[in-house]
Image (cartoon, rainbow, N blue to C red):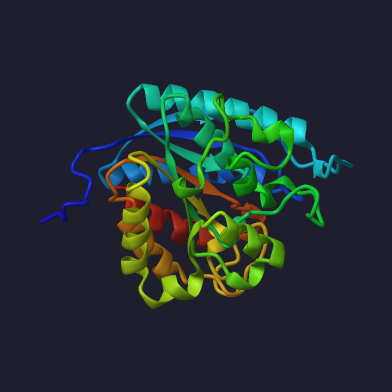
Length: 302
Ligand SMILES: [Mn+2]
């Protein structure tokens, strides 16, 4: 028996690889889509009963050192990736498939939201070790994948703030921050979070009740949006136990907690896209981490 909130329509996923680390602080994430394929994600989804069409990969953009310009690094290449992602996602969604987008760094999600926003409003469930509310003028690094939420809400660098065709991609009530480490936010990010009254469920609250907190977050977002993008940054996981992410977070979730959350969230009515970001295959020399995460994704999506 499925709950009233459970999805009862069979989905077909349209897989798009986004081999980019242009928005990051080092190289590695551009190899993630190939690593997912090597680890049999497509076949495993199929064996578990999911329908998947593999649309291949977009252009490779590997991180390169670049100077800060107006507070950010390599904005032109990040923007180019976002526009390509938006086109691909719009095409896949237009064909009736749910885009399953394999990043790449977290700026990938800007493109996913931009693509879906061409046909109406969306919400974003941001499952991530961070809230990514940094701003160009306050950031110590100028690295764009620390500023994703800022750009989605229409602030930050002009190169990324105008990806929406009719103003900011998202309104504050269309964002649900979930699973972040509260110790990672500086004063400025906490101030932005509270000033905009963003909905937020930090990792300690998730840990107390993974299924309940996921269900509550989804329900709250569903009141603001009838289509939802599920962003999954693997840095929501605890680096001490699961060091797959590009950047370490030592107070993250356990894999089984993430698994419970994803199984709950992926059942949500209105799931419009899934994005998996920040996998750095260099951190997984024997492939055991990608295999374990593949099984978690398959259990949630199939
Ligand atoms: Mn993150």
